[in-house]
Length: 477
Image (cartoon, rainbow, N blue to C red; front, side, top):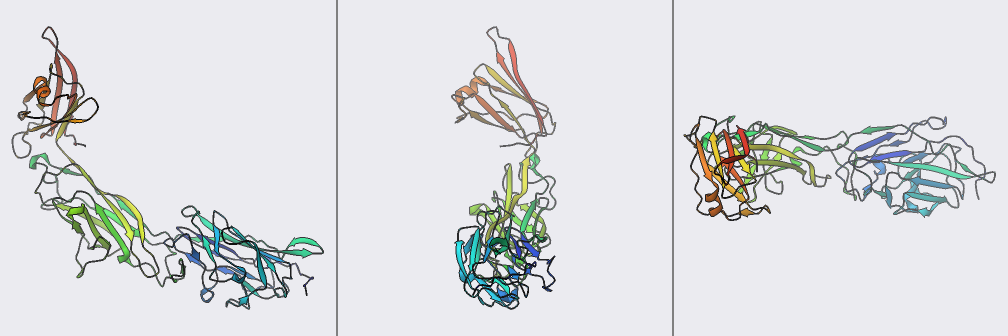
C-alpha cells in the first residue's frame, strides 16, 4: 500500500565531498529539521595515492561516506524516488539497487525497497524508485560500501560532490521532498603527499685544476653545496582514509621510508652522494633499503643514477662529492621522488621532480660563424694567470658545416695561448684539417679571453668580421 500522506519537513540530505589528489570532508549540518538531533556526516577521506578509476566508499563500521537521515514522519512511499548525483567528471562505477541500504542509525542495515531505474554505472546519476513497502520514517538511508566511484576524468585536486535528493507526488504534483536537495558547507583538508626539490647553489669546476675539482669546494676533496628534498604528508593521509579496490583503510600516515629518491646525472668520478644529517639511506633501484642501513645514496655508475629512501621527511642537505679523477663537463643532476607500496598506500611513480645540482666550468669559449681559408682568428688571454695547472691556455676546436653537422678535423694543432699573450689560428690550416667547416667553436683553458676574426682582402688589407670578449665565463654545451 502506498503511503500517500507526507509531512514536508526538512530532512538531513547528505551532500558528500571527496577529491582526487586532496582529501575532502564535509560535515552535514541540519539547518531546518527539529526532528533530527544527530546530523548526517561524511566521514570518508580519499587519499591522493588511490587508483582514481575505482574509489571505494567507507564501510559502515567507520561511519558512512553518504547518509540520509529521515525524520520520524519523513517516510518514502512507493513510486517516490531517490537520486544520487556526482559532479566534476565523476561517474558511478559499482552501484546497484542493493547499494541503497536502510538502517536504524549508522549500522549497515538491509537493502532498501528500491529499484535502480536509470543512470548507474558509467553515469553521473543513479535514480532509484521506491518499491512496494516504501521506506518508513526515522531510518538512515545509506550507500553500501561496495558502491564505488570512477574519478579518472576528475581534474587533479578536483572536488567531487555526491548530492542526494528525494522526490515524489503530493496531491498529484511532482514535489521535491523534505527540503531536498539541501546545501551544506564543506570543510576541506589538504591531503596531497608531495615532494619539493630545491636546487643547491651552482657549482663551478675550476680551470686551475683542469676542471677536476670544484672551486670553492665545501669540503675535501670536492663537495658541492646542499640541495633540499622535502616530502609533505597532508592531513588526510591518516586513519580512515578511503583506498581503492577494497585494499583496506590506512591505519596511519605513510611511513617515511616509503619515499624513494632517484638522482640521475653523470656519475663517473662521483665519490658519494650524502645527506649530512643522514636523512637519506642507500637503497636498490626499486626503493628497497639496503641492509644493514647505510647512509647516503647508492651510486649506480652503469646507469648514471643514485638511489635512496628518506629517513626523515626533510633531507635538506644532500651533497655530491667528486673524487677529482677526471675533468668534469658542464652537467646537471635531477631528482625524482616516488613512493613504494606501503600497507594500504599503493606505489606512486612520482610525487615530485626537480633539479638538485648544476655545474659549470670557469674556462672561456669563443665562436665564429664565418671562417674560411682567408680568415685568421686571434685569441688573447686576459686573465694573466695562464701557464700553470689546468689553466694552461690550451685551445680545443670543434667545427661544423653550414648544415650544422660536426666536421671531423684531422691533424689540426693549435698552440696554447700564453698569459696576456695571443695565439693565431690560420683559416687555411683549419680549412685543410676540417673540410667543409663553416662555424668554429673553441674552448680555452683561461678564465678570460678576447677573440678576433679577421679576413684578408684582395689588396692584402684586413677587415675585422667579429669580436668576442668572454671573461670568467661559464662554458655551456
